[in-house]
Image (cartoon, rainbow over all chains, first blue to last red; front, side, top):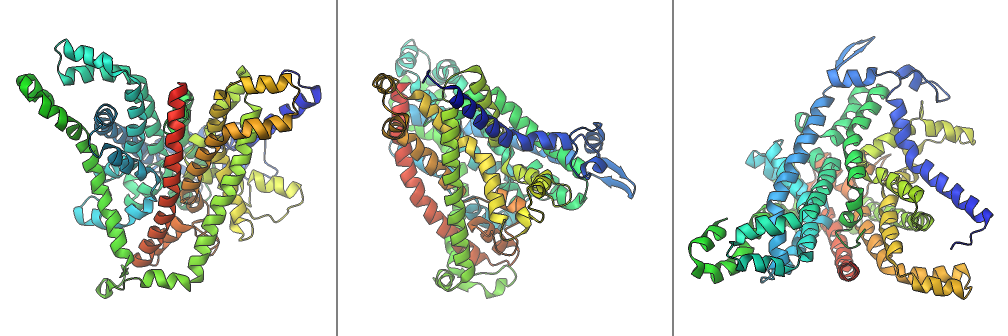
Length: 285
Length: 307
């Protein structure tokens, strides 16, 4: 591998440059658009040099967009708050439910444990609308339609399997002997779980939580089907924004930038765990 | 909790609680999921009914009629065809691209690691938002991609709004979002391969193409299979990108399974047909996911052994 010719190195470099351009260009371009006025955006050919403006962001944050035609209300901050609230709460609930279950599946091979674990995993692969469409009818009857509780419940479909399978893997990697030793010293089961198992699996739990957060944040279809405007997260909100605001492309770009920043930041922060988490632990990254 | 306090009070109860404990621990998670399982069975029932939200009085069992009518329904065949086509094209292209990029980045260096981290960004972008980004870039009025297309002579390239290029456009967005997924999986696979066979091949002066086809590919196959099946399962269910980009249009060009079911449910309020579509999609994914899980377990054991 070390004896690469100059030509090959040039070709490799070119290929990598093309790859980076293809995958980075949309993000960079939308970021640039978000600092432009509508006037500069509509100019042809597209401008690479422009006078940046923060007007789009101020319009989004204050919720008021002043145009020549009048003032327009933007509810985007509400969507952003919904995204934060829904994702954080869903992950918290999923951790509370999923970590003990993961521990049970890892430590105790009880009857039917594999079947149950697989059933939970299979949620990850079932078509979302198969469950969602009848659920809309049920939720209307139960009064859960367009409530945070209903949404958080359904979000467990994404968060729970992820947390269960990743955290279970981490628990399995802890030698059971450490826990036995602590038990023999006279500590209760719960103390062992809290003082030994949880801290040792800590990194795994954190990684699974971060990933679950990203997936919850990025989810689109659940809220599209089950929530109306005031409960919608950014993914659905941005789509509605495009149809309602028509030609406010600068604000739309700024909204997209604000919407993707949290997951991108988390991904960069937790990138070391991503490979393992994304493949449900099939590949140790 | 209850099991724990029980143990502390009566050490003699230890054996019983040890049996009960795992159930106590996993029960809450199970209950939450069972609540979600009920709609699944409801879907099965709906799929055997004539059920329109607009005509609730005419709701009755028609047994297999929803399914039988699919055979003569060109709209259904279009859905099946476009779903399989979409899944096939995206996964094949993403696999080739992902493998290529993974091999470019295989050598551990600061630059390569930096690039592979950067490439995670599209994957972490919500697919629906990614579709919006591309929608802005392909806008016929000011979109930068429309402008670039016009520079190379495609004056009237209409991206997602023309039936002839809509599939191409959504496939492009899918590739943008999900190629990094295959890339990072295969990169992890490539970097975990034992080095001896490659060193031996280099010593013997074996041609590179031989090394690739006879050593790299066979050793990488479990990873490729896992990545492919994983993506295939997701891709055949694609909804976010297509719905955010075109809502299944123009016309019925992109009415893949989930989009078609969504439109059936909310626009034509035909619950029966929508449910039957979802059951067919479920059957396909169930079949795929069984193969996937078997494969994935094998790979997981292997990763565990190496770790």
